[in-house]
Length: 156
Image 1 (tube, rainbow, N blue to C red):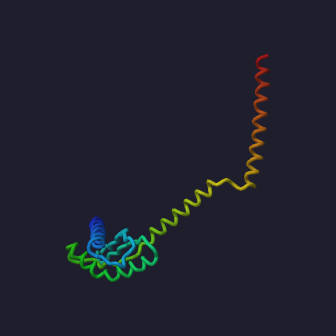
Image 2: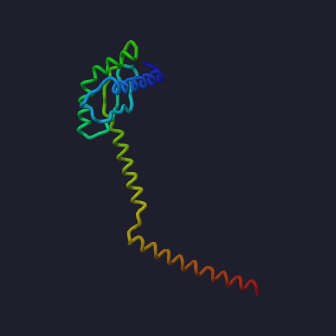
């Protein structure tokens, strides 16, 4: 078992190395979407590394990118292992990261809820509010009159 600090360093190093490999070494005309490595999880025994990625593009571009990553996986595995310089290298596995899409959909729902709260209320509730406001105004109008009477009585 590796220490937590070593695992974090390895995760950071693998993420940086794979991003560099995709940016500089691996080129393919089929790859049209923007590929982003979102995070890397390394097992505690350092035997496996799961790389999470996202694709900015259409669903067709996403499926093309998945095929491309699957075909480039052995090359990426060798390149990462040679860069790490450790005895036992983790086996790399790529997984599409759906958390970014989930975050976007939750954010959209929150925005819609805020927008619906900002809209004026239906007329049925508005009528009740008007009646309450009218009743409150009548009560407020009655208060100053009684206060004036007390003050007049106090002056005499």
